[in-house]
Length: 391
Image (cartoon, rainbow, N blue to C red; front, side, top):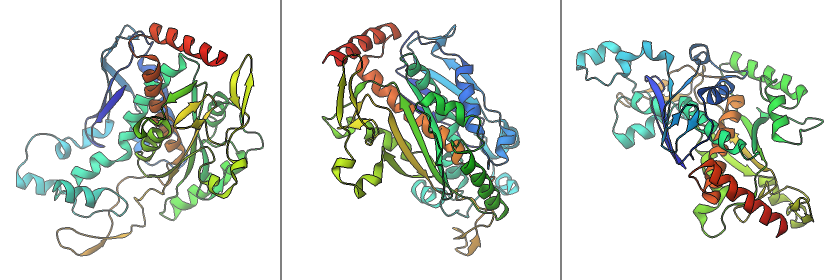
């Protein structure tokens, strides 16, 4: 299973084509829209969320509520396009028209793709860079991840993202849910998708303070996936290790600068006896681990324990007290321009991260059990899980 996305932040729509989804998977637009709505929530979001009400349109690969096995095309309309048709339209414009638009960007913003992308693709107008590099693209990635979650749900897999930390305030709930389903229920009730009600209040206050000061703050999110069998991924080659593939996917999310699996970097500060997970056996359950410090992975493969992945998001670089930069035309210094922005997008990023992980898990699942029809996959899955229990 693979996908491609296309579209710009202020273009007419965002598009994804997913190839390799098996036939006979129940799928409707509402299955996806629910997740798009989750992405738009969160204390600290900017004005763009007041404009866009993201809804997906399925234009291929699904008939009468079930997938056909053909590529699935998803589109999400950008409502703001009505104000940007002349600026972002595909039709040629004259030099005079371009000047009259007064939207040419020659001033790169620190922390963005603007300058690097302009140099690489030889753009004097950096709007050609920032429109595609915008985090708006994560909308369609969530839509793709929603299809992956729908597939995994057929096999009892539940995936949830939540916020562990914002601006140095750490979530330490008295009771952490035992499973992803409970995490989903609790985080849907939190404006910052946090499991700790006390930390939640402090996080919201800090976000408000950052907004007041024209600043932004980042944080740490965690994704938990329950119900996966052992053996997804492979130890035989570097690019088949599933934890590595997940790490790449998480790092590709806008503003993410680090990934941990299980206890992650904490493992460097502990002896091996406090890092590795002892193997246990139960006739009904089969093999399992006494602990889950390695986050559900050994040798690049799932162990059957919950998959636990953390991602670090830096503060959004678009600030209302802008940083210094240099105009590429005049070479003169200036204070970086402001595009609409969030003071904190960590709660939304937990949803994006959840769906990035979901896709990689679903792709590995299909690699293991086949990808033609849901019926065939279920037969292969049941035979394998029975073998694993009796191994």
